[in-house]
Length: 286
Ligand code: BEZ
Ligand code: FE
View 1 (cartoon, rainbow, N blue to C red):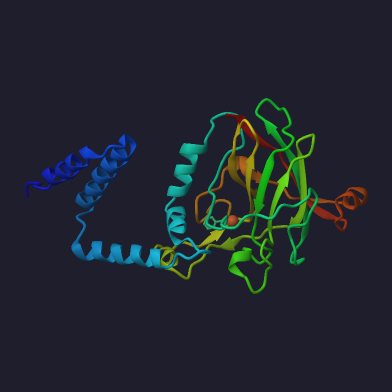
View 2: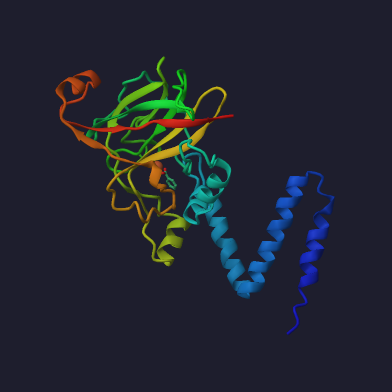
């Protein structure tokens, strides 16, 4: 049967010609062409499209102030990671970026260097330390580090308002005069992304597991430099090769080394021995 729908695509694209914002016109035109090509290629039926609309409707209905099901959908389809990599990959020696995720939704509390993020003493104590540097290696004093992580059971504070105080696992730090940062926390655990909504249904229907490898989130920023949104992943985690949101980059995997050093433990205010992750965050001049 001849394809009589080609004119339809062109008619829609022509209708976008009056869009005054050129970037919006470009995006809508490409979206129209790709959506139409998808429907043609798959022979999409009315029943299937209605099912897809019901799925997207339910996705919207699952969004609240503390839950973003659309971000989650973008994450499990790999789109968040693709967009982050297109926009955030400096291509140079700067720290690689990865997804923001849906749990950076509350302001992290300002904390002094050395503070403990684990307000309920829920897990294996560890120290995270390093420097924020420019790509040439110059330390960046006064750089700001926004940090957030799930607790040792794999839940963020906003997921357990009855168990965790607001701000548990979160901190906003400023590097010292030598660009250094350090804080205490608990070793993060792998955790499942929320599966009690439409995204969970999608994972179930496709036989995929919902787990993310253990990680700590960071946004590092400094005057005159491009901020980076990233994680560090705990080396050896069993989900590093199958992250539910495709966000692992090899350069971001860090050892959380078992450290037996009583004087260092005293300096950091942790029991000896302790786990210690050391790494630098490197920012590109803007
Ligand atoms: C997170 O790491 O917080 C996250 C990222 C993507 C989807 C769900 C959670
Ligand atoms: Fe996370």
